[in-house]
Structures are given as structure tokens and as C-alpha cells.
Image 1 (cartoon, rainbow, N blue to C red):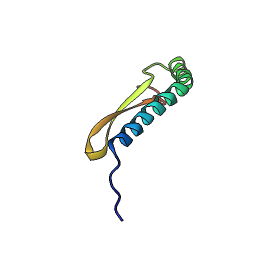
Image 2: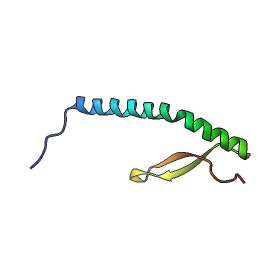
Image 3: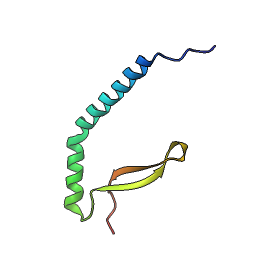
Image 4: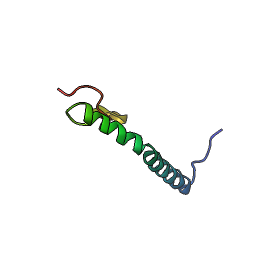
Length: 73
């Protein structure tokens, strides 16, 4: 049994829903993220965010950003 591909508007609705959900999630998490950033800055010198290059799908490199949890050099 094969299925026909979905119409273009289905993908547009999915994309819109994903973007809105991601925005609302970041908005809801932002107070906690601000507290974590302040805690990192107050307890140790160095940058708040750690940046690392990783390999993604199709071996395409991308950068990942994380809160720094180790002591800076």
C-alpha cells in the first residue's frame, strides 16, 4: 500500500506550528535560562555560553550552543 504525498499547505501548517511552538517554548523557558546565565556569570569568570562545532545530517557541520558547565581555562 502506498500513500500519496501530502499537499503543500499541510507542510506550511506544520512549519508554522513548529515555529510558533518553538517560540512559545523559548519564551516560557527564558526566565529559567536568565537565572542559569546569571548563576554562571556570578560563580565563575569566562563566557556564559559554550560553542562547539559538530557534524550533522549529510556530514554537514553546524554549531551547537550550550551553557558552560565547566570552569573556563
